[in-house]
Amino acid sequence: METSIWAPPHHLYERSWRLPRALFRFVLSVGVALLMAAGSVLALAIPANAAVSGPIVGVASGRCLDVTGNSTALRTRIIIWDCHGQANQIWTLTAAGELRVFNGSRCLDVDGGRLTAGAVVQIYTCWGGPNQKWTVNANGAIVGVQSGLCLDVSGASTAGGSYVQMWTCHGGGNQQWRTDTSLVIAPTPTVPVTPSPSPSPSPTSAPVGQPVITRSGTQLQRAGVEWRAVGFNLPNILGCNTADTNAATDSNLDRYFAGLPAHSLTRIWPYGNSQWRTVMPRVVKAAEAHGQYLLAVLADANASGTQCGSNLGATYPADGGAVKTHATNVVTAFKDSPAIAIWEVLNEGTMAASAKPFYAAVVAEVRRIDPYAVVGYGAGTCYQSVGTAAWNECKDTIGQPGNDFVDFHEYDAGTGVSPWTDENQKIAIDTGKPWLTGEFGFCCNGAPSGFTSLDAANGSDYVKAEWSSYLNAGASAVLYWSAVLAPTTAADQLSPSKAAWPGIGTYTHQWQGN
Image (tube, rainbow, N blue to C red; front, side):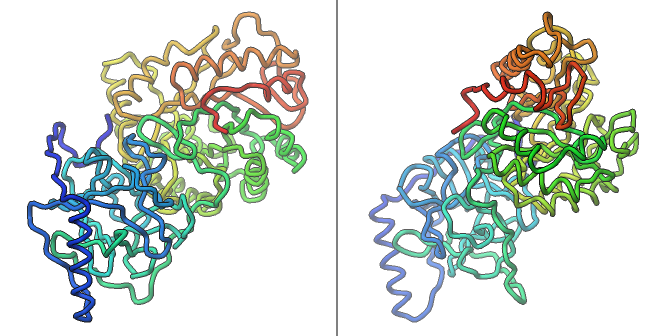
């Protein structure tokens, strides 16, 4: 189970008691009336052992602080939504400075204890850490004790579903909160916050329309509901292969994304030496037009070093090096697209302990720019028996708080999931993360019995059977290697021109969403 970074291995807490809601409202309304009569707004003292409850309403939006999808899953994001009074909108401000929800079973939590503007706000197990302590100023600002940043609606948006995050306090309406009858009152002295010389705008929230993909505990979610995806690796379209890059016309991209199952996932490689600046905008636009999603890999660690000429090799600089710089450019360019479901740091990088600072630096940069992103280190070399020193090292690296999921690649012969699935799934279970199969394929002795070619119409049946095997085993995504846009004669490579292609779009499963 993943924990916040300061969480002790065992934590016990007592549920705070509440004042009856009617009394709570009466006391606050009378207090505010007295203060207004006095011509000033001050914080009221609340007894040290008291806890008060109610909905928390954004002053600018009139919408309530809401746990997405009424889900109690750890790491579920916080949004604003139309007020309805259900348990996911009733917050208890305890004497300890916690904001509890779901009858005290979850706490408002800053993901990973991050201290920077844009940090994700979520629910988590209550454990008393400083990233779960809050004070409430007389102007209605809710301030994180640890960071001194304010609870903020991203982009100053008033739309339902807008994310809540941490941001520099500037006194704007998207940082002011009230109960349904009065200002929220602080139970402890407020943390002094020095206003910015000029108010800093919050980052732009995700576009309204196509739901963004988020992570909640061991799930990937779409619109607050578990989402599992099938799809393809489409590595060549950004410049790894001239023929396929030339084939990335608007009409061919439209044909590809239109032919996929609904809400599928396509893995692309916007490497530093690729043509991502010119081609990727059209790829993203086409994916958005069809409600499809992309997994974008930022750099390559494959030992061959021939994939787009961007081989990282054995160098994993602690500051992130050139990969971090490249991440800044790519993520900045596409952070606002809901089609970008996942950022992945490396293709097939090491999971050695020595690489942890490198991964942490790049992931931190991605989240600085795209704070609500799902970000992973990439598929590592975790083909080790459970419990061995190598497996434990791999698990420790994957288990770092900044990494959102476990990814592994397989080209094993036969039908069904790889024999290495158990080892990687065990890491996912132990670290409380989703797992996915970023690559499987029928090349390299990996073809199932009976498969001949994707030039045959029944070739899609073999791909769909593998998809089903992994989804039913619990994978959050499973992606075939590979697809191309240009015509191809390779028996194991799929393109929209092949006989197997029409059968791909008929595939449905219970987790793809509406």
